[in-house]
Length: 555
Image (cartoon, rainbow, N blue to C red; front, side, top):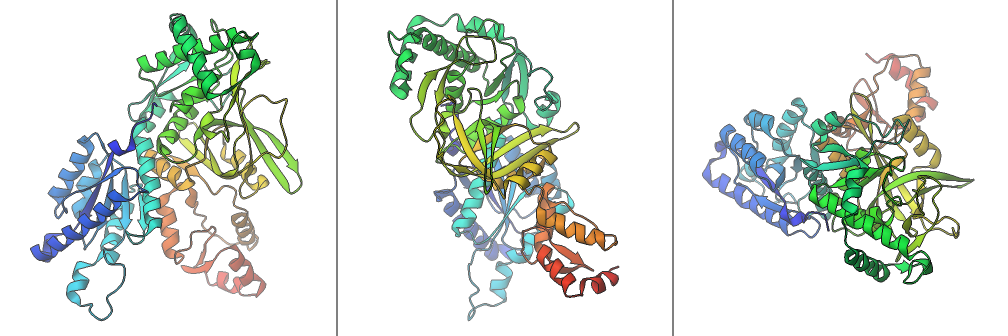
């Protein structure tokens, strides 16, 4: 397995306070913080170690802690909590140098108010409700992207949110200093697989460098026959081997050729300390067949992959494999291939020529050989399987000239009801959410690629956190039809209004949520700073004849 052990990493639990409260109160703060950190560390939901750090009470202590976090290799993030009021100006210099992801846990030690016992001593100790607001203001003022998790620290839902943030931090950490190799260039004349590799290294931390496919072929040619035979035996053990590929079968040599490619490719990646790669069927000089089963098995072992030179997707697949490590299900390179436009049952058929990871298979894959109409090489060996149904997502990173954008669509995978006897590749059916028209139109408008990273075990919240760590755009609420309706109505009223796109900023989403009494759906409409509600509320006002009056009073 090429994936890191998540328990080798740690996030630091940091509590802010101040000397104002005296030693007795600070001892209680430390005691409470230690209990919270210990509970999170023991949580079965959280994959990393949660390490309690001494309570910070001064600018010097905060700065030193942030510098120490930066220098500690296995520290991949900080969870911060203000048990009491911690004047936020103390945090400025520390936050200015902090290079690790930050999660703001907005909680308090006690779950309930002790109605009959509460006094001012209790109030002075348990001040998270306004201590965290002071901290939040400063981070918003400094435009620091972070995750905010609100709820009691014993709540399983809080643990799950922290789980996904920790996993995002692990994926982000894995990309820092990572190397990806591109064999040849991207597919000729294709736009979306291009991108600025220098900017990607600045933004994401990984490097992409090219080797001629001849460099790979030289390594493949040194593989010994005994190694090949051993791997072929493993294929036969792990997969349902098609008759022509078995010993004495007509295509047995093709299986040996595929095994030799896998062994050579694996050695090249290991020797070069690469975490993923790309290739293209337009540059196969010296290869007998396009790597099929080789790429599928390498992905299953944790390597990232992108077809046709798509190094951005290769890096994303790798990061998502790290994020999802240890969870049921898998992550894979994917492609939107063709549509099913049956009325009331719209679906997408996802697949690729060969390279879909068996970690997402619904059963033991079949190892088969079939012709491939592109590439001009011998028939490639590949793993053929279907994918189970359930909630999954597709994600795409694209280069938008001067910035990168992450696009995510939550979809519902569908168990195939029809056989596909003449489509000998790995394949999956899904229904885009909220519906085909909205999702696909939104994807296209956002510039999403045809190549994606497909995940059975991550959610959009996890990728939202990843995008915030990378400081890139993310689109998850694409082409919201309710937002469109509300905008059309306001435009028809011929009045000036401000549209705030919350899909791009965690800070904006948090602001909207606080102003809208905790509501997270979009749109949320405000007139004269008064919260009106969503799209339905806006139209109800209009139908009742009240909207025009409110708009006429708007400043």
